[in-house]
Amino acid sequence: MLKRPFALAAGLALSVSAVFAQAADVLRVSAIPDEAPTELLRKFEPLGAYLEQQLDMPVEFVPVSDYAAVVEALAADRIDMAWLGGFTFVQARLKTGDAIPLVQRAEDEKFTSKIISADPAVHSLQDLKGKTFAFGSVSSTSGSLMPRYFMLQDGIEPEQFFSRIAYSGAHDATAAWVQAGKADGGVLNASVWDKLVAAGKVDTDKVKVIATTPPYFDYNWTVRGSLDPVVRDKIQAAFLALDPANPQHKAILDLQAASRFIATKAENYQGIEEAAQAAGLLQ
Image (cartoon, rainbow, N blue to C red):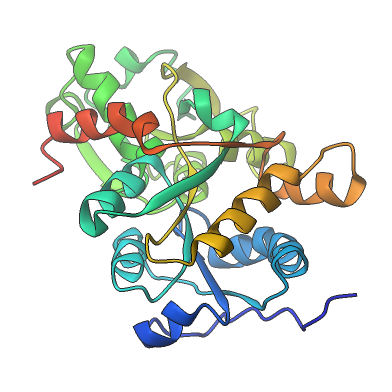
């Protein structure tokens, strides 16, 4: 039994006062909108209930409209914790000066992106020359930054190589665009691709993976630097205690596409910061 009812603040605006957030009477959690809002809420609900039990405090999910809004909310202490991509974490760290990454999925140590196409004549990235291409969000690590970085390393300048570039805004949207023929090719993170395939939401008779990027560090759960250290340590311990041998815990881990959570540190994302600087995305 939960000691307090679990609250999903689906309609909560980000105008909550910083003073109230500082008190951490309620743990306010957000996430980069790299999937549909309904999917983000579905994935978070059992995790939020688990955190309420472990922390003995209410947990609320605060949806945001775009990636930049998560960074701004952390910087203004309007949220306490956020699910960030590697690049978004770098932005948050630079913006706040003290955002603290707590945990990442074991899979995030060696994350990859998948380049896909539904064009039967396309079998490699080179075959997409002169065709249309979809990235995810401009601020997405796995849907834009790192794939672009690896393309540049291979001598491919996207704006010159493709006839047109578009940004879908989310990984599942990229897959839908490619399947519907709105783009000849696209890139999305490997975790979402695997999930879409497993759920039958992408037709693999039409859409195929034509390339996989080299591995890189990606997602993590980050807290604002001013969060009470006692609460911060409890949050990290709660994530690390999730055990795949426990059926209830495994259900939570499965929704997070995680085999388990491991501790992380800011230094793990130095490579992403360097990639962002090389791409001119950091001032």
